[in-house]
Structures are given as structure tokens and as C-alpha cells.
Length: 370
Image 1 (cartoon, rainbow, N blue to C red):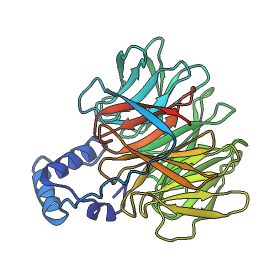
Image 2: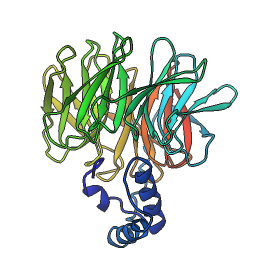
Image 3: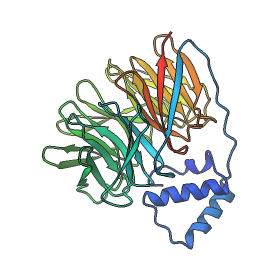
């Protein structure tokens, strides 16, 4: 309940083996259960919330061609949560369950993993600063970490408030300030790397579950409120929060993308929609995702004005392309099945990098326009 509301129990549901994996995953990120409680809880969940049939992927052809390259992460079961395309061409991932960061050389396929200083840190989100250092949120151990790839040294910045136990999505602004969400604590924060100072503020709406975050060209952070139908906007100087309400009360924005015109795009996980929100006018427009209302759009990004995202609720997971100029969709099935693509981002040369959590893989997608 600290990460998601109870509706997640009903959809999609799991088999007994699936609930075993879910309970284990939740224990990795902070849920406290005694050994005697685990089988009791798992039996109850499997009996009460059995696995439902997943909708099949809807594949829509078009003129754009893509090719997938996938790498299995070094540590089996590491559960790659977020990807990062670094400036030097390397691909990075957070291995949430193994408490590692991984670096892939896409030219050679060589993988190197770096273990966190604190066991069980649950590294989650990833970003890079201008010096090439890799920053991550330690979702299970309440800190922000900085890895120097040249030395392998990790510096830990602990949360100043004991309630801020699960830092989530990090992103740098142009001034080099690191902004991040703190989902279960219902907070957002900023870290000044020059001083190590961290400031946290609470989101006005209770149980808003601040999740994905982007920064506008003016340096304004926006974040998705996964627990409600709102998108938050932060005044950078004061850290005052203004919440923009989306029209449908059932909307649950999870991740955000942003285009060059500072328009915000969101994946509506609950309703199976792609949404567009213009902060300047307040205008909202939505499109039904090709996979339908149970398609669970999740990881999302923008590349050259085109929106890319993944449907995590269909089998296989899909990569979806949406062109705002034509309002046309094109979709591809992910070769490994996807295993839930929680986040994605562009590379510097116009490809995409995806983390495929349940599949234990990281993918690079090369795009060939007509």
C-alpha cells in the first residue's frame, strides 16, 4: 500500500508462483514479513486475486522500421528497473533486487556491475551529470547515490527526513541541481551536488504517489501523481507546488515525457491512454492506447517530437510510436516479451534504450524512418 493502492491487487492478479515473486520483490524494497507470515500471505493473495488473462498485443504496421538488440544483465534476477543512455555511448541500468548498477558497452557487449555500499539499497532511478558521474535513487535505503565510473567509488547522500524512505525518479536541471520524487513519502526533493544539501517538500494532495519527473526548457520540474489524477509543477526557487488536475478522475499518470515546446505527455496506467497536457494553456487531450483499457502504458519518452512508450499490460509488451502531427500509432512486440518496461529514454544518436525488468534484459532500439 505504500507504493500502490489496493486496486493493483485485482489487476492483473497472479498465479501462486507469480505472487511468490511479487511478495519477494516487495520484501526487497522494504516490506517487513516474518518467515511464518510469507506463505500465509502468499496463499491468501493467490486464492483471492488469481491471474487474469492478459490481452494480446495489438500490432499496428506503418512506415517506420525498428530493430531490437537485447542484453541479459550480468546478475540473474537483478531486476533492471531503469535504463540510462550515457554521453559516452554506454548503457546503464539499476539492478534493483541485486543492489547493483550495471554498465553495458553496446559495441562489445561487455557488462560491468558496481555494487552499492549499502546492501539492499534497491537502486531505482538513474541519471548522469555533466562530469559523467552516474546518480541513482536508493529506493529501499533512503539515499541518493553518486557513482564515479572511473574509480568505482560511490558517494551516499542520505535523506534528511526519516519519512523519506523511498526516493524514486531523479533528473538534473540545467543548473546542475538534482530533482527527485519520493513516492511513498508523498514528497519531492532537490539535491545540490556542490554542497550535498537536500531539501524536501510534501505534495499538497495526500497519497499522491509522486512518480515520473521531467524538467522543462525553463528549468521547471513537473511530476506525475500516480495516486491521483494530477500533474505537479514545482517553482524551482521556493519549491512551491502547483497541481494541475486532469479531467478524468480515474486517470493515473505514471511516467512523463516532454517535447521541445514544453508540452507534457503522460502514460495513463489505469485507463490505457496516452495523454497530452499543455502547462501554458491547461489544455488536455487523450488518445486510447492501441492495446485497450487494460494495456497499462508505462515507460514513456519523446524523441524528435515523436512520443514513444510501452504497454506493460499486454502480451508481449509493446513498443508504441505516436506521431502528434498525424495522430497515428504504430506498434511492435518486444522480442523478449518485455517483462514490464518501467522506463525508457533516447540515446544521443537517436535510438532508444529500455529496461525490461521481468525479462532481466536491457534493450536498444534502432529506428529507421522512411
